[in-house]
Image (cartoon, rainbow, N blue to C red; front, side, top):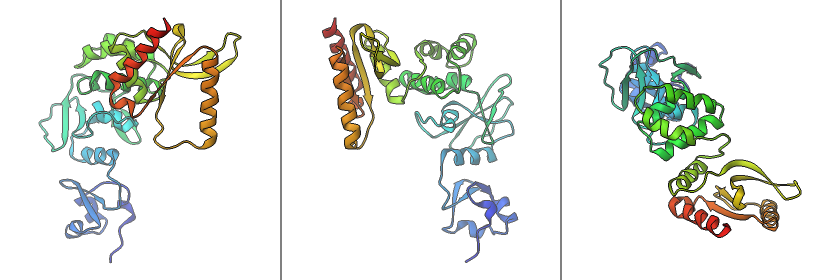
Length: 288
């Protein structure tokens, strides 16, 4: 069995790349290789990640194409909506059509940034672009995530959508005022969206809770301070160990002793997010 050239490991490559490395076209049809897209291959052992597919797309797209929309979000680490087709943008005229790729023709300079060697549109523009593809609740999650991960400043994002005239900006302008700092998870964003949709007051996000003497009690996910209602998103998928369970129990006891109502929303609850939001509304009504 022939050796696989080291230069081909962990990446995509064209037929020409393979031939330069000493392989034949026929060898690419064997079980040690996999076609990513026509004319572009990977080793069968190389994981077909989003980044790998984006690198393959770059090999067949015109120079100047940059990842955009939900593909740009995914390359940053946030996977919302459909992975395919991939979305790229270009500022020059091109009639290139490639299976599994949407190439958006844009006006003006794109100003892409390099993300581990791949050209990707900036986070502010990506937020607006994603508004053409994502639901409102997922767009809120995208905005929360971009801010929480330091990709963009919250005030800068809001200013950008006011000044922008890109496709998607109307939805982006509706959602940007709801984006917050320090949101811990996509599910937390989705829960905030449901609370907003049924008209509940805006909760504080991931803030400290103190007792009447000023002693720290907890850091709460979604805090309705006026009503002393705390909403916690519990995303655990597996059983906690005994020490963690004990800590959670004592923490809740302390909060309840200080007059707080604690509503725990689990991943299972978020399969019916409207029902979860109604539970929060009922807790607020009971606290009034």
